[in-house]
Image (cartoon, rainbow, N blue to C red):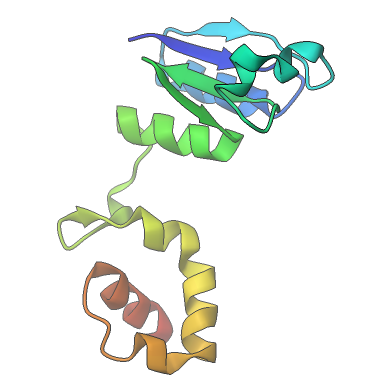
Length: 130
């Protein structure tokens, strides 16, 4: 496995560096600054079109935004992916991440969620029943 983390520790890249360390992953740290010109170079923009840090490349797979990176690392290495997100035998991360939004949408437009089948619908119904 080849993991490269772009971003200096005195930025939100610290979240990713910390997660990789806690997971015991071998990684290369490339300490790009959010003020540096390297984040606007074409090679880096191919990794992160926003030209910001942090970003990673994991075995050729580029990803940016620190929380998305940490979620990806946790799921790929399953150490910090709790069973509470397992509903009906499938991972329901979409519900877990967007529950507040879904709840507000269900309260505002209940007709959209009436009779909605599936994991997200069941989980949403359980949340609304609380």
